[in-house]
Image (cartoon, rainbow, N blue to C red; front, side):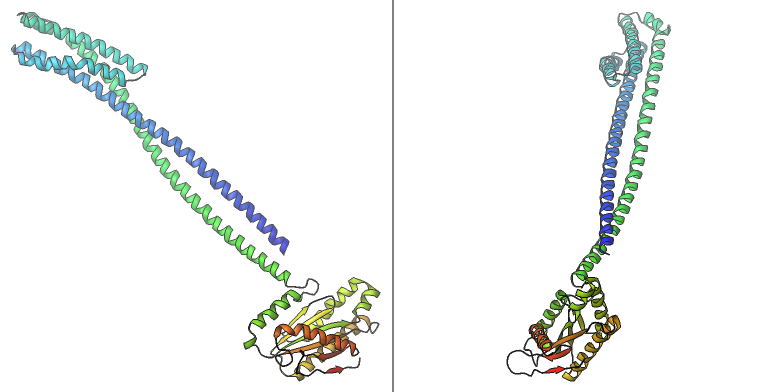
Length: 405
């Protein structure tokens, strides 16, 4: 079980590593994609602003020319000098407006070519307007009107409007494409963000599931280790460590404890089996003895193996001595029965038992083990296959009961 739990824990650790690496890579890739998309959206924003500037400058060129032309026509028709105010303002602003158009058009060759054509048409138109104004101011209004009627200025304006229209349409399309691209990328980015959030939540949920399962396995592994540490590997009975822990627990609650008995058992004749048949046969005998002794005890009593062929029975709420004698007789009978069934009388298998009780014979629960151990040696010296009650130094009874084999 321990090996299986270890392999499972190792597999969970590998899953954790894969999950965390996957989440880290996924987040890094997502961050990279978002940075990339953000840069493109920013570039789209710059293109939109650039297109807006070009459109504004182109419309301003046309506006200034129309103002200049309106002032020229008004002056030619009325001779009123006030009409020259918008004319002069339009002419004065045109140079700055065209220069601004050249700047915002950037390095785009098509746009720059259209701007150059617009500038050329603007120059011709301004020249035509200036000639008509000069003729009219010199008193030759008829020649000025005749020059207008040649439609020379109209041709310049038509060409200029056509080039500006091409420029405006081109940059309107660019602005539309940039706006749509930014909008689509925002939608894609939002959807990707939602998908990543859902994926991360799923991965986190799976990680929590794996963690809980891993913790459960670690807990099971810890319990298994604790159980192994407190269990005799040969017989499956509690070992000396478990017995001492139980005695300590009873000692801490001695005031509430009822009469407690501890029986120390040492198997007689076990060494003969080991010497004659080997340790494997001895191990088989110990397992059979453990099974037989367990069936002879009460369910709530603890039977532990504390040494090679030594067992201890801890009985809480054990009752009167008569009950303990009955228990000792059952244990003696069960051990003899195992020896008879396993070896048919070839080996004399028995058990010497030392008995100590609290609080009548032993003053402390912690002293039960030592007193019972000493009583067991008394039983052995009395002829084996017997039991003996032991007590702490001081008042108390001690007797030895010898049983025939």
